[in-house]
Length: 90
Image 1 (cartoon, one colour):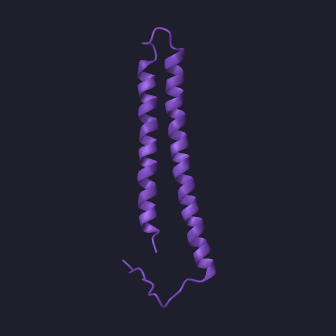
Image 2 (cartoon, helix red, strand yellow; image 1 turned 90 degrees about the horizontal axis):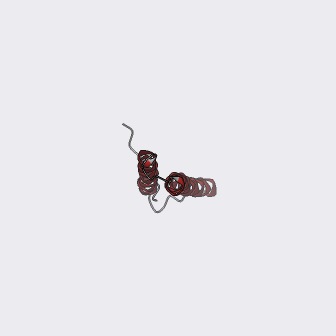
Image 3 (cartoon, helix red, strand yellow; image 1 turned 90 degrees about the vertical axis):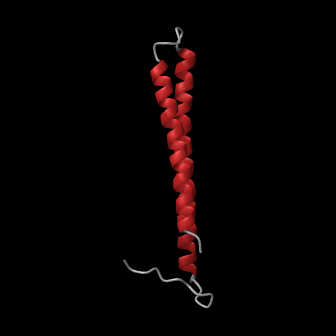
């Protein structure tokens, strides 16, 4: 496995490299927001089904499934965000 080259304080990144790092960080932010947005859509859909279901039993499994998927997506998004953020530190 090749070693990553660590930059010393004397070696400064050129503008192109700094901009590439900034774009990557912003892409990481957008990815987090996409995970959270998708998870919230699942949870909101579960809440809508809950409010539309009159006898409260016909779609109970669907409500819990959608809520679980939504919360799982949000947790995965947050974990992925912090893992990538740690990798991007300079």
